Image 1 (cartoon, rainbow, N blue to C red):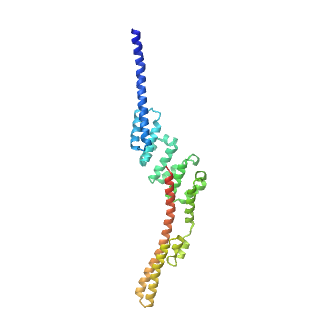
Image 2: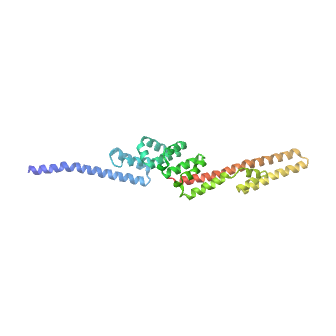
Length: 274
């Protein structure tokens, strides 16, 4: 009889810890699955709380590092870029071991308008070790800084990264054509008021400037012929103001066109990047 009781007690001693261990394992697995489901359903606020809870309660869990990275990614998707930088500065291992962590670090700096710091971080990495997203981000940073020449040069120096992107090459080609167009021709043509807008295909501005300025000059001429110098000088002065203003307007219009091409490139790359 005593032997039977002894065996039962022994079984209980063995099974109880195993049962507790199994229950703990099942609880962890359920919590991990729940946190993952929150993350993949884009409920990032809740996923951050759940991943932090799991890592706090189970610091030896096999997903500890991945959970930390998903917390950082969640902050990134929530546009809390300062927190992303803060967390990755604390955890150099994740930053060094995960290419996407390096990307969101550089992108967060860029989104915080710390573009030069973002560039320096990207340039620390060899192009061969850098992801395509990092190269596109560097190009985007150059465009935001107005360094279009540097951005364009990447198309040749890193052709293997960009050669499949036909739209990018097309838009850069159109932008460079606009940059190469001389300002001299529109300004020379604008000696005749409004004609300087024609090379820019701004026909409405050309017509309105020609009519308005021409009217002022013709009116001033008739007034001078009628021996009304004061009134004639007034209309002539207004005509000169309109005429000179059209030179300023032409150059500003030309800059807006170029800026439009650049903004289109920026928008395209930002849409392409995660």
